[in-house]
Image 1 (spheres, rainbow, N blue to C red):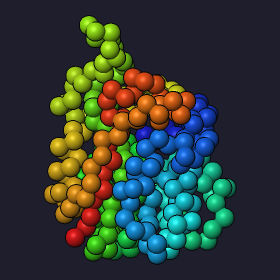
Image 2 (image 1 turned 180 degrees about the vertical axis):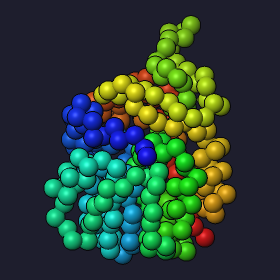
Image 3 (image 1 turned 90 degrees about the horizontal axis):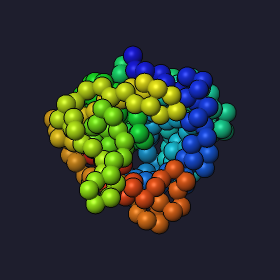
Length: 244
């Protein structure tokens, strides 16, 4: 079972004040880039893995998708999503992505925002998604960038020229990373970019687009949770893949 940190009261209290959870998708700096990577979605059946408060599910319904099934491990997140959603075509279910089972060929699009780096067995998840997609279906997801996740002690340092520098030691050593984010010992799973992309290819996906998201100066000025140092490295890896 994945670590259910989002149901920790201290974590949840801090997380609900996070700008992207207060504002919604407009508070997610990467959202315009992710949105541009989505295929045409009108009439599609969507699975949202790690759906959180349901921001994406509600947005997709407003764009004309036929249905959204949201899955999240956190009871608190699902309860909030249900509270904020009044749409019979959106259904939410508590589910662990480590053991997730989906019906075969039931979805035209699988979407996920910043959830897959909590999953230890990424290959099993990708295989489950591939089977759940119709032929011609799409997978679009974001994860923390492997460069961002790699160090055992992630922190900004200053180089000889006074420039902020992010360590990438440990990049090739895949596996658990425990970090402090609202609380201590938040468990994530680091994989190299090669492992992530090759797993998708080996499980039958065709890569459609890859983005290494780092904010622009204008985006940093507009986002209270970002600093100028965040322009120095990619924060997220965004992937759009297709099931031929």
